[in-house]
Image 1 (cartoon, helix red, strand yellow):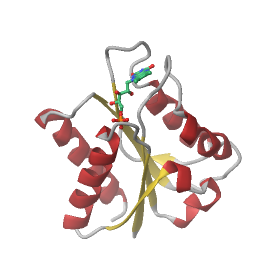
Image 2 (image 1 turned 120 degrees about the vertical axis):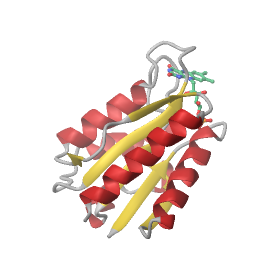
Image 3 (image 1 turned 90 degrees about the vertical axis):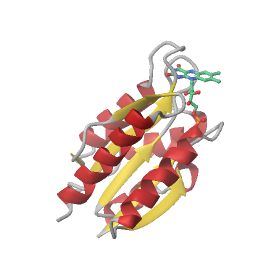
Length: 146
Ligand SMILES: Cc1cc2nc3c(=O)[nH]c(=O)nc-3n(C[C@H](O)[C@H](O)[C@H](O)COP(=O)(O)O)c2cc1C
């Protein structure tokens, strides 16, 4: 059972979160691939049993620029019930808090993915409670693969 975590991060928060989640999944014996969204081919997602997208939000609620090709391509793929969820650190100090998480969640659902954990939005740096939510998201993904 192979899980892909694909992330994008400008100032490092989402990179840290993605690595934290990868470590947690690996400690629970999952086979994890970790890569950046800019290197991820949307047409190859159905090769994974589960896909986790981790993104920040930019410029008035937008998907970050380097993630836009991937986001566009997702509209053309059939995820064939690939299990997925989405998470991301963004900031309540901006409008449309974490909207890129919502955009990816909607798109992966419309492309026939199967959402197996509620999406998680984190305000800036994760606190203990946020990290617990990240682990719970991971638990749901692993449970869905058993
Ligand atoms: C110019 C700029 C615009 C931003 N716009 C938004 C936004 O519209 N909505 C939001 O929730 N966060 C917004 N953010 C906050 C980032 O998403 C947040 O700082 C996030 O934690 C960055 O993650 P990273 O460290 O992985 O790059 C913006 C940040 C910057 C610098």
